Length: 156
Image 1 (cartoon, rainbow, N blue to C red):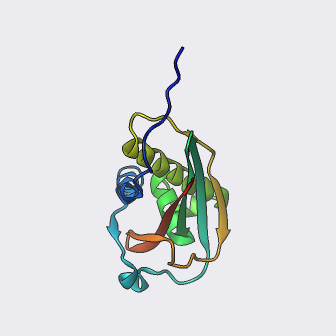
Image 2 (spheres, one colour; image 1 turned 180 degrees about the vertical axis):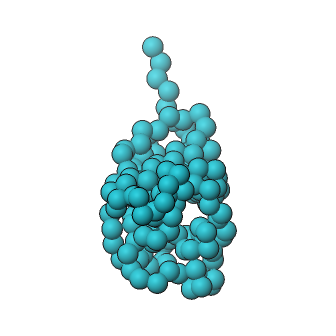
């Protein structure tokens, strides 16, 4: 009996924006544009209510997490589009569940594209409400013209 050892290098985090774009456009009927730090201010929403979703992934030496941060207004709009309903018909818990699923879908697509022949375990998404993240360490995209942040943390 033989065992396979994963000999792949580090995961390619540069593929994550494409995964976020594809999931947002195809499943949430949203449009996504790059949002460099120099152009962040016009896309930054007022207020400080954000939702953070985290999905941990693991496979041999490849362990880490994908984190997604969305302003609550954008989160509600995306949840309503995903559910095919008005945002007023969704509870905060439902919006949180959809944000977690968005993060899960992005993480899964990214891992599939980064290492198509490797199986990864994904933990259930964790979602919290908090203050907006600081731009350092985060990459931002404009989803429906509103800033949303994401990052990958890979454990070594």
